[in-house]
Length: 293
Ligand code: ARG
Image 1: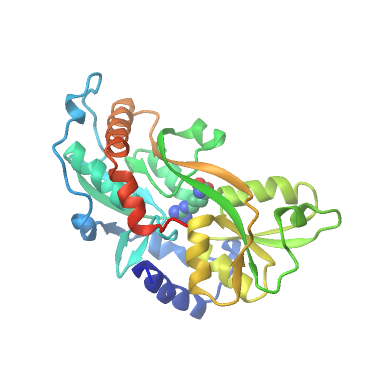
Image 2: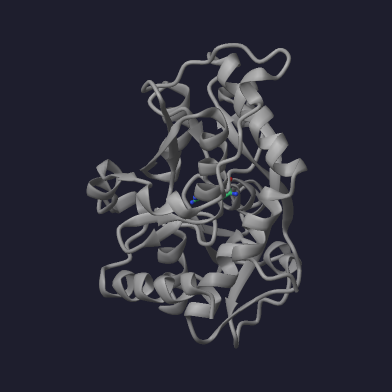
């Protein structure tokens, strides 16, 4: 068993012990969102190579929110991209960010916050980068710039093993009236809201955490959960009686968000990422967490 599944199981047990109220009437996230996490545990991650980014043609001086520090805004509820191991945030995104920071000669600092706050932290300059298994969407491109994509995500549907929902089409079938659990403001939320609620075919229940939406499914409060495939696999592995439907809902690209007011940083982060993609570092980080099927 991958070690993050074990941690996730612990996290799920904690989540189960707490009331899993929908996001609209829950403020439990408040203390967590202020708990900025130093990313000290990722020091063993991707070897720091000689940085060549600053010498790249066209790369100019960049500034960061705190001098010498690359501040990453994330929402550590999204295994294997970002999740807690003890009180440290780790995962694919954290390791890639660490490798980028190494290339740029910066120290990485990870700030955990609600998913909903990641874009505004980047936009407002509180964080230098937003990395949260974040899908590039037209709406988000109006707020921030994105780097090249470093991974692909697929929105999938989790149901209970005995569910009569067998495909995405069942959610849109005439007369369908399902309650769908999603993580607030994720693309799962955005797409289902557009496709289902707009058509008057059902209800969307929005949760602060994907894990809470999955708990609601286990407790019979929602009929399915629409979420990215990798966290879906982690949640299903950590919970009995759930399965992922074979039908894929939407395929999307994950990228790093950078402020539109910091073109030099955007160029530097993008160049570093592209080097890490080209030399295989990104793939080797992904392979540490995701086993090919
Ligand atoms: N890919 C989806 C989106 O961009 C979900 C990302 C959720 N990430 C997280 N760290 N909770 O909306």
